[in-house]
Image (cartoon, rainbow, N blue to C red; front, side, top):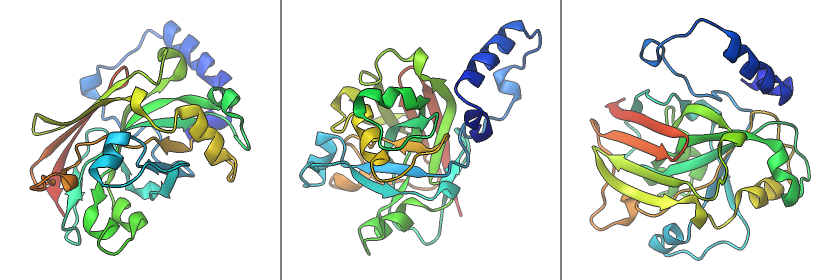
Length: 249
């Protein structure tokens, strides 16, 4: 996919034309979907980007987007298992909308940001709270293998009329734990692209995940964290659903 994006956004038009002409197809049940962007050069995440999530953590909303990195090796497919690493004591879930950069972006104005976005996907930002908060290692706490389910596909931006009006939710074993709408994003999509590209060059295929709303298991009393056998369902309206089972590592 990154190679396709490097060819330019016009390549997607060529693919659309080809898809309309082809007479061959496969049933979705007969294929294994991988993450649409399995190896981005950069995976940038936002923290505290919903007011209700900031409130549940007893933290003020940041004046500027609060960024952190997540290892690209954490990315896994939309229906792959999430491995409960023995080093982890408190595993949590976070439903997020992610955007995918379509062409090289440097010092992009917010007004032009959508020109640099190719589309959107669902992202589940699995987090080891014991690392993130216990010793302050956000990168380690976010970057265990399989801690980044993504997919089920990349939906191009022309298919989504208003990215700031999408319902998002996360259910554990069928029980909805998180439910919100992207209209509540504190840093909006174009402002986020402008901010990140102000200090680093974004490459085609780079992924920016826009943060999670309230309802995480770490911040309720008693805590409702993930356990082996749990099934995580991550949904973003107009994009699709991830379904990942937690398995022992």
